[in-house]
Picture 1 (cartoon, rainbow, N blue to C red):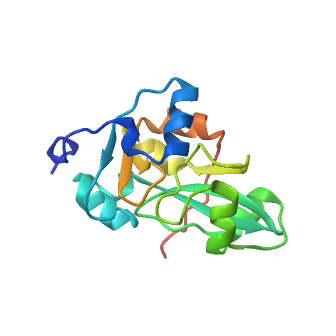
Picture 2 (cartoon, helix red, strand yellow):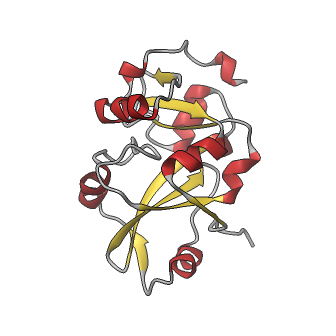
Picture 3 (spheres, rainbow, N blue to C red):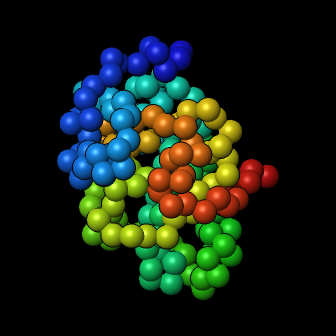
Length: 169
């Protein structure tokens, strides 16, 4: 199944209002698709869109020594916390609580986009995202996604390219 099999394009207004405003401020005209069923997980999003799981961008908030950090990871992979810790020079890295995710980004888990957040956060983007010509990410709502080339997405997020993907044994 290809991305052309997905639901027809919708207006940017289908994105979360804060994210729609971020798109306007950036002068970015992207296709935002809204689905009747949630695209909260990478698996749900890939199924709804009709793309590979690795084409989904997960926007994950972690706490590094108590400071929020955003990690952008492909949907088929997991983040290696030790690699993140090493990249940041942090003593401790752990998944952020739901309330910290909302406080930091302005969005609920499952709808966090890669940019357009409430606060400026350090961003690490796994290099594996660049292996696709197009990736899909949340548009601020668990039912809305948008697509963009990964290099532009990482640039707009202010991300530093790193290798933080968990390696399978």
